[in-house]
Length: 276
Image (cartoon, rainbow, N blue to C red; front, top):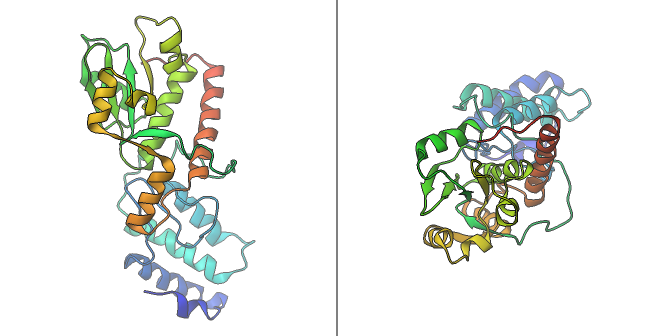
């Protein structure tokens, strides 16, 4: 279905309800597309805005704000967003216990190409070091779930290492980055493991990058067999080619992470960090 014929003419306040219903029906028919994955949504009516992808509750809030905002004089723009609110609330199957409480708005502008060419192991993976070889992998995975990292699985390696696999989408990238940052702020990141005094009863963790992939040990061997090296720019290009949609904007994704990381660091400075 196309919006072109509708967008050629204006509507009055009295026609708003009817227009909302028309937009709602179009969304029900899948045009335009709203749901990108189980955890990532887009606003189809705000192209070019800083915030291009949302968590479910955040998108409802955005659509409600635009639809009810008195400062917005564009009746059709308000009507589309009100139709989006109705569609999200009435038609989208969604687990209310999602990641929305952890995601901040994608609103921080960063220098162009910030982090574009950094190589990560994809699918997203994290490295756990100093793992108790006598411990339970299922218990370790549950601990990570309880910390909010949403791992897909945990793979034990030889010695005291394990690999944490995350979802392949952008929510997986977010969780992998927060996994790394939480270890870093507790002084249990990769640098601490490599150069500092390792605490025997503590786990160390980080997201897998190119140096881990190329290492000549059990970590490198596993990563080379089960992943590839990609930049985030590569993955964005792949997503655009596969779907024709801009699933995530790189600078905004990094901005979101930096804002969340700042919040995390403030919390860790205010109170002792919980340990795995």
